[in-house]
Amino acid sequence: MSTTSLPVPDHSPTLRAALLAADFTADGLLDLLGAPAYAALARSETVPALRATRGDTPLETLVRLFLLQRPVTYAAAEAALPLAEALVGGWVVRDGDGDGDDGGEGFGGRGGSDAVRATVDVRPYGGPEGEDWFIVSDLGCAVGGASGASGHGEGVVLGVGGASTTLAGLTVRTPVTSALDLGAGSGIQALHAAQHATRVTATDLNPRALGFTRLTLALSDAPPAELCAGSLFEPVADRTYDLIVSNPPFVISPGARLTYRDGGMGGDDLCRTLVQHAGEHLNEGGFAHFLANWQHVEGEEWQDRLRAWVPRGCDAWIVQREVQDITQYAELWLRDSGDHHGDPEAYAARYEAWLDEFEARKTKAVGFGWITLRKTAAERPSVVVEEWPHPVEQPLGATVRAHFERQDYLRTHDDAALLAGRFTLAPEVVQEQVGLPGAEDPEHVVLRQHRGMRRATKVDTVGAGFAGVCDGSLSAGRILDAIAQLTGDDAVLLRDRTPRAIRLLVEEGFLEPVPDLDPA
Image (cartoon, one colour):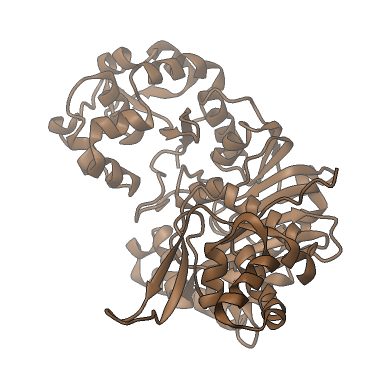
């Protein structure tokens, strides 16, 4: 981990202007590097990007300096940056000893007495509305590749990775008064929240992380956030928010070696504690979004375990995206910390410690997924726990919001009200008929979503016919009566048995309720 002090955010406006002038943006990088090298860089593989930045344009210099973290000549840095301010602000330093040699002039390696090197990783990041943002983190900690944070200290602050972008995509983006980014890290969630929240508070146990959050917001020309040091909800013990987001240190490990990933509590207690106390800090109607790991314990259903986490007065939607057995899980995080590159006996000892921990807790596997809470005054909160390992289409914020709106509808409409209601088929849904070629009738009919969660569900003939004519003009009951006339079914029996299927199609987003007509 870098031992230099963090840069001064007061110099960020002129630095930002220079970065933009050089087209040091997400789109600019793609144009310069090309898709293969750009994708390789996201995997922390630098060789293709080094080959693509052999020239002396300001953009190539900035890529080598901040992304590839190679020294550049003083003259090249001066052509790309307001160098005097960058040096005074601490964004770059003179590399007089030449200790940052990158291994060859052909790749732009110009270490030596006139060399300049970066003190932080500055990474272009495209906002949801095309904004040009920059995420600032520790050197050498671009996540997403095999190396991760290997070899860095326990207080390392990571940059943008798959988990952080997943959480950003899941979050409901409606205008709110107050938002809390708990465990802010390099500040990506706070940056997103600043676009639709009047006030943003960012907390972290690691003071360095708060410094990086400040830099990320400043360099991205976003409003500053209130920064509070402390664990979990301790820094904001008496406050409530309209939005809470957290990508916490959820790794279930023996001990707390690495602050950025290990929670320091036994098993999945950190994630459980975080979720259980979130309800106390949510305003009515507010959302809380978490990424989490949880144990699969012998003799206990994982779904029941997670339902017990949901605080009173909250709806919940919990989605398990992946499950790993305990050996896979231990190996993943031992690689993340670089232990597999060290002494084999030390590696084996740490591997044993992970397995001992899991054995003591009767843990057979570990799940990973999303947890969303919504504060509600409903007498019967909705708690949906499901497994969905299939591809989804991000961003999912609108899908998450629609899920809870459908729960509101379903719990306030009994079967009679459901039959009196009108529905439309969601616009992204298509019907597929599955069967042998040439067969007169399909074996079954599938409704499939092509957006959001991309669900698919089998329906019978009645279900397919019902969904196919739902255009909002007729009530569900009238549609079923018409189907009964066509099929010869008993209309009363059809009305009795179909609401359950309608309810499921609504819950999963295949059918959208039409708002009730205004009686006035």
